[in-house]
Length: 379
Image (cartoon, rainbow, N blue to C red; front, side, top):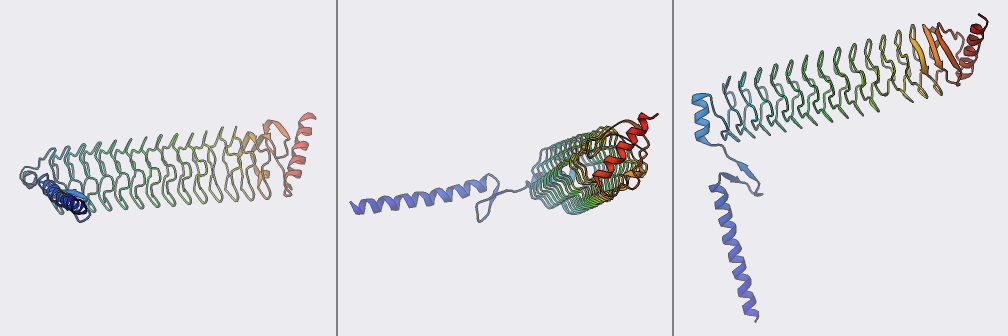
């Protein structure tokens, strides 16, 4: 009985050995290259490669893993082509046609893709560092986790593209269209987005520290938990933006439109001339911020901290400051005020508001507002 069981085990081992050898041979016959850990990697077709190099046209061809570094493929038609894991370092792909192409994990560092057409292309995990993609059409493209550090994407159309977790530090996106794009968790520190369009884009948890977003149009943008510290947002349109838990410390928001936006951390931020009408900034920090000539008409600023803030020439009409901290803030230099003061006192009609000497906090603020009301009643 024991011999029978041992024989059966030997038969099983022999069968499995033959099966494994058959499986490996079958994988080779199907065009796989099998690595030591049995992870398949597609091999390119030499016929397809020859066709591309001779005709500059290779639609739906298999060029996966091909070495095309320094190749001149300008104006090439590679629609639906498989270029995954291909080596395209320093390649010239300017004005090429690449809709639906698979360039995932490809190395395109220093490549020239200017004016190329890549809608719906898969560039996930691709290396595009220092690449030139200006004027490219990349709408609906997948650029998730791609490395685009120092890449030039000026005037590119990236609307509805997936750029989540991409690396774009020091990238150039001047006048780029990123409307409705997904840039969540992307790293974009020191990137240049001057004049860019970010309408309805998702930039939650993005790192935009020290980035230039001046004169950007970012209406309805999602900046939840974003890092915008020391960023330049001067004259940017951030109306109805979600800035909840965003870090804007040291940011320049002079002349920015924040109407309808949700609040954030504005410690040391420069909001000179900023418009923030009908906006909720409840319990936000404006510590040592510059709010000169800013307009917060209709905004909810309850429980916010204005310690040390400068408000020269600011307009705070119909605002809610209930519970706000104003120690050492320059509320005395507001151009006009109406609404609810930190102690709950109501000021009904906007007019010049002077609280000179109100340096001890809420009590003197309340006293000043009472004096103002009495002055009105005596008229």
